Structure formats: structure tokens, C-alpha cells
Amino acid sequence: MSDRLDELKGNVKAGVGKLTGNERLEARGKTGAATARGRRKTKGVLREGAGSLKEGVGDLLGSERLEVEGKAERLRGKAERNG
Image (cartoon, rainbow, N blue to C red; front, side):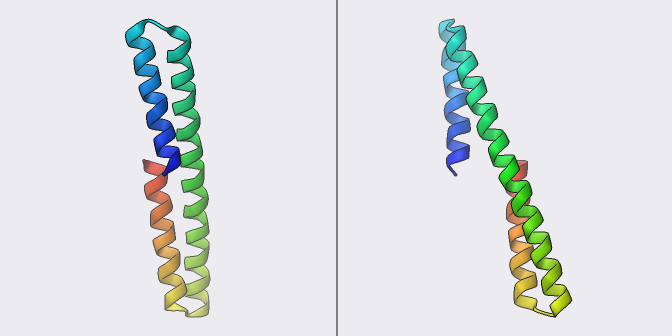
């Protein structure tokens, strides 16, 4: 959740910079938002991959619990990645 908050703070900072004509603040805000967005998407991709792996292992071992946990993790990662 902190990545989303950092992204929001960056967007607010960029907006304030644009409104006040402060180019440096606007640039710092845009950079902060882009960095947070990149972190969030990377975490989502990694979680999605781990979930797919867990789901496959659960299917291979015949463990319905492991398979369901993997699917939940994969879907959580997909939601994080897509925003």
C-alpha cells in the first residue's frame, strides 16, 4: 500500500508544482510517482509469477489448498500490476 501512497504523493507534488510554476517541484513529483509506480508493478509481476508457480506445484502434487493459494496470490499480483 505504501507504493500507492508514494505514487499519490508524487502526483500531488507534481500538480502543486505545475500550479505554482515550480518546475523543480513538478519534476520531483513526476519522478517520485513514476518510481513508486515502477516498484508497484515490479512487485505485482513477481507476486503473479510466484502465484503461478505455487498453483502449478499444487496441481502437480494434487494439493487443492496449495493450488487455491497460488491462484489467489497470482490474482493479487495481477491486480497490483494493473493498478
